[in-house]
Image 1: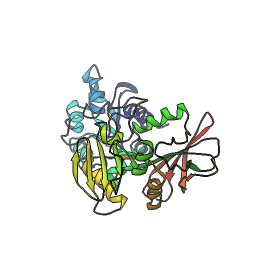
Image 2: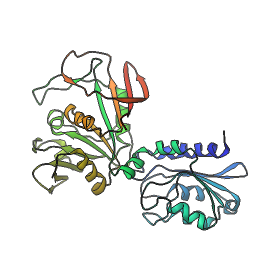
Image 3: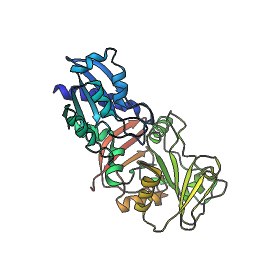
Image 4: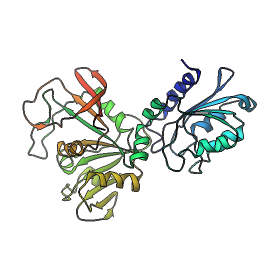
Amino acid sequence: MDIDERYMRRAIQLAKLGAGWVSPNPMVGAVIVREGKIIGEGYHHCYGKAHAEVNAVASVFDKNLLHDATIYVTLEPCSHYGKTPPCSELIIKSGIPRVVVGMTDPFAKVHGRGINMLREAGVEVVTGVLEADCRALNKHFVTAHTLHRPYVLLKWAQSRDGFMDKTRTNDGEPPVRFSTSLTTVLMHRERSHVDAIMVGARTVALDDPSLTVRLCDCRVNPLRVVLDGRLSMPAESKLLTDGLPTVVYNRYRNCIVGNVEYVKLEHDGLLDILEDLYVRKGVTSLMVEGGASLLGQFVSAGLWDEARIETAPFNLECGVVAPKLNGIIENLQFHGGNRVEFLMNGVK
């Protein structure tokens, strides 16, 4: 294995420790190496806190060792003042002569500027080391800042014969349970990795979901988003009464009532909603949890990047039909008797 790739792989390992805590910032890891030995490591722990490069430099006891060291960073060091000072500036002041970067930052305020700042200061910069892995690490961040919409993850559970639920006519009738206790925990972990969760108004009426992260740790709960064109959600729904932020896209009004922001849709297109979430709310990733009609709209529009489909080992024989996807299986897991597929959009 190439020596630069070896240390970049370690930086990627470190970056993943920030999952669920750094968004809408990217996950970033940094490793400092001198004479074939790691002398410092760091990663971005939490949104608003010190970046990976800062933590890595701070971990080096003798700062004189930095003067002939290399720092490996999964993402281009930032060049602007945000919640923290520029990391490119810190690297220059620390006297580190060589920087190895996994990928260029797609964020417009940084894109290439951090690398240029380093090179203009006489620092050797190597780019594109394990670039594909670094881009996959931050697929939410990359998608959002290149397509100007959130990364869209579709999620549902179904029977072996492809039904998401039995047909329910009464609001109090319980849904069919497909998930096991383990896959429920895994689903909450995936919720903790996204900025927002979307459902349709009928799902709210039938299930009265909380759409919060309860079975694992995360920095904040995802923003709840409801597509409710006719404002038909029951007034007593948890999403309207529990005090946590919720955005309701509808056809009638723009206003804020308690924890709920109502946003009037000028057009019915999903892309308009996605762009609004990205521009106004800073949402870089969105999980669509249902119901079948809303999921089907995203599938028909081709507006999805990934899907998580859990299939239970029994048939329903009739009911609510699950969407059909033309995707590429990236990962397949089995938890007890349940099959969980992670598909990527193969249409792009």
